[in-house]
Each structure stands twice: as C-alpha cells, then as structure tokens.
Length: 109
Image (cartoon, rainbow, N blue to C red; front, side, top):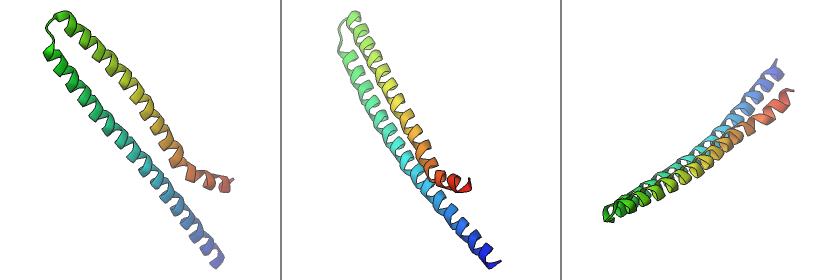
C-alpha cells in the first residue's frame, strides 16, 4: 500500500511539473504575441497618421487618390505579413505548450 501511495505521489508530482512547464511555455509565447501585436498597432497608427498628414498637403484630387492607393496597398501588404507572423506565433504556442505532455503520453503507452 505504501508503495502505491508513493507511486501516486510521484505521478502527481510529475504531472504538476509537466503542467508548470506547459504554462511557462504558454506564458512565454503569449508574451511574444502581445509584444508583436503592440508593435504592429503602433506601426500601423504611425503609418496612418503619416498618410493623413500627406493627404492634407496635396493640391489635386489625382495626387490624393494616388496617395490613398499607395497607403491602402501598403497597409494591406503589412496586414498580410503581420497575420502570417501572428499565425506562426500561435502555431508555436500550441507546439510549445504540448511539448511537455509528449513525455507523459510516451510513458502511458
């Protein structure tokens, strides 16, 4: 009975260690995502502000349309690149948070 209790305690300790490692990975990855999103938001705001300032300085409708088209194209390309980067960060988050559980699953087999 004592041996079973010791085994149970060890399994509980191992599971807690695995959960803590997983939570550490989630925390680290989530922090990276937040930093990336913050940087992107700041960059987008600055680019939008600069585009508006340029629009206020134009003298013709053609130039205004040209500036708006350039800004829209740039904003779209930036968004697609950022969305790709964020999706990679989320995929890494999933991989890293699951990694500690792989050893537990291998022991279970």
